[in-house]
Amino acid sequence: MKTFPMFLTMAGRRVVIAGGGEQAAQKCRLILKTQAKITLLATELDPELADLHSQGRIHWDASPITAAHFADTALVFIATGCPGIDAALHAVAKAAGATVNVVDRPDLCDAITPSIVDRDPVVVAIGTEGTAPVLARQIKTRMEELLEPRLGDLAALAGRLRDRAAQRLQPRKRRDLWRWVFNGPVRDIHARSAERDAAQMIKDAIQTGTFGDAGPSPVALVGAGPGAKDLITLRGVQRLQEADIIFYDRLVDPEILELARRDAERVYVGKAPGAHSLPQDKISGLLVAAARQGKRVVRLKCGDPGIFARGAEEADALKAADIPYEIVPGVTAASAASAAMGGFLTERGTCDTLILTTGRSEDEQSSADWVNLLQEGRRVAVYMGVGTADQIESTLSQAGLANRIDVDIVGNAQLPTQKIASCKLGALSQTLQDNAIENPAILFLSHKKTASHLVSVQRGA
Ligand code: SAH
Image (cartoon, rainbow, N blue to C red; front, top):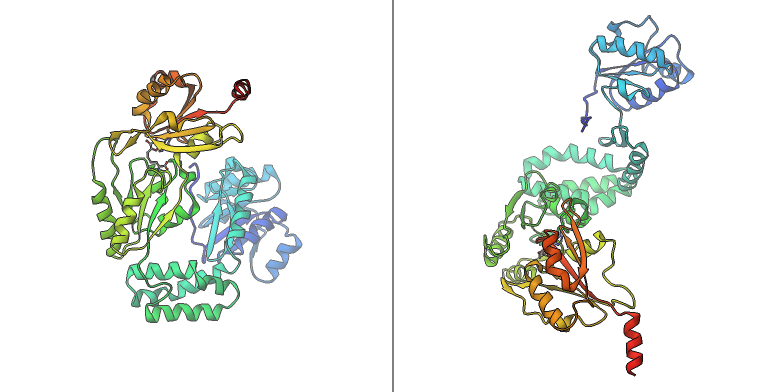
């Protein structure tokens, strides 16, 4: 970050704006949203500014500008509309030690005004360090849609009730309260202008300590996707942000853990292939124990929690302990890998059946019937398959398929270390070796239907 976002305290502080025309008026409108005291330095004011001055909302100083004008300011805007004068005034303001923004001169700015979504006291500031103003506007539009107009009033109401909640409720209960307020019926009711009803609901909830669904919160088995931070679902991010404790796997990228609350506990329960750091029943036991303590638990797994992730065993343990659970799906490695190659998992007419399988089951080599799996028209995505590649290659080659099956290999799909290679089946082991591809990788074996096949069928008929 070349610039760092901060919210400046403005109440009662001085902001000086040099200029009396439209540019100065723009800055003035912005700063009038705050509680700062505005002084305009200009020999003349345009009608809008003159009006603000006559209403007593701004001070006006028409005397010759010196460094003293800029002393003791929170911010200075230089906005005369004349580049030469702006540059000269910038030097004067800097001499006074001010933090300066010069209109249209990012090179002279100590501070850049962001794009703002204003739901005071909720304020979203968006900056791109001048690289992409159009993008900033697009983000602003999205945020404007996302945050209902009355959200600021609800936040202010919550602010007024914070002390009362702190007196009556324990910290975790308080977090649940505010989660319920901002995520549930109260926000809806408030957004529909029923402010008094919303306030009453919050007060009742604080008073009685009961709100929403009082049952234990479900343990969330969340798919983190293949590793890239932006390939987890929005629901997954939401669960991470709600979590008190997160149990995560080896293949979950640390960047994704950053999406969780800073004070959430993070527990590593992953295992490298072949190395048992924590047996599965121990992991299930940890989930049950944490949920029983009333914690909001997230079990974060790479890819999709329903695919080669031992989710069923954890779910069984939770069921046995009478703890509810929820599955949040994720982008599985096969989808991520296929997309990374610019390919498609199924292709109409030539590859209509997709099979997900694994090179390993538990720690034993797979006993999959590869020849049967790879009938024509099928694509098989092999998870954890690098170690079994030799065996797959020799089995299928013996069945005469060495040149019929196309292989695509994607290692570390969607990550900076991604590797992609393609070959015929007969060259699988060699290709893995040449490209130094190791797990995590997906092997795609495709036995496509071809026109030549149709011809041979006709001949045979
Ligand atoms: N639940 C996961 C799979 C876990 S098994 C999912 O749905 O994707 C672990 C295997 O997943 C790895 O051995 C590898 O075959 C595959 N895998 C996970 N992340 C991957 C990635 N980024 N690129 C390629 N393969 C990946």
